Image (cartoon, rainbow, N blue to C red; front, top):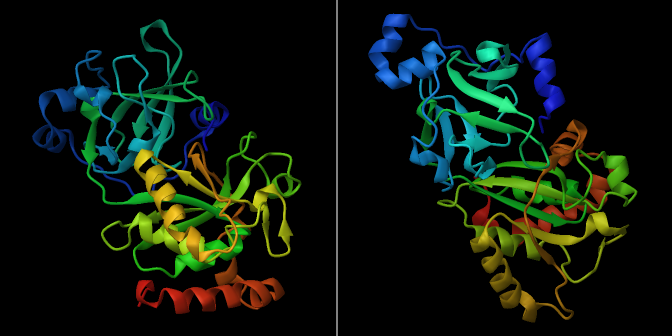
Length: 323
């Protein structure tokens, strides 16, 4: 997660390298863009406050650069700032946006540009909501809404090495990241989480295509591949970081989670103690935790704990596996 300190470092010392570069002549940009798009993005203009309905639109999806199509923001990071311009708390990737000091109009500000094509987007300020504290104040005319069928699910069910390995094998799952959610400390370390002092649970964040696998499918697999009846414990792993939890990203996910738990309760001898919480923030775990089973298949823990869990999941949900 980027913070104001990161933004200042980029502006002072240089930006991250972009994934690609798009360069066009001024004539080519003029031919591609409307007059207002050109004025704002290529001439560093500013649109009038409250001139776009984008300020009050919060439907799921992505926002891309109007010039080159690079994805810049996710609708999940959009908030109502009441400033007159669309506002976001984080870019979709750390290297999607470049930062530059701006002393125009008698002010000291940080300008944001598309890191791919240098289009002027707006400015970023340190007065946004927690946890990042950032407000990306964007010109709506510099952005284009991109419809997306991708959705996100966040589950905790014990050690994230285990849960990650289970969901990585499923058809329709586009990515799985291990991390921490539900705590009170920003960017916690694995050591701090294991000590139980941060309040976080070990979780996985799943990006999936609902046209191939539904959220209900994921819930059923989640609740069937760990023990949802043991409080703060999965096997020998004990502590609140191992609690069974579903972090709902919206009301629809919350209601579906409640329904699925009620449907599955009769299959268990004890009450399901899985928590349902509103999603707040996901902190990605250290790099060595990502794809742990895939990278360490001969590890003793992987062989003793994860391999049997995977075998069970493959048997239960054979029709859901990737080919």
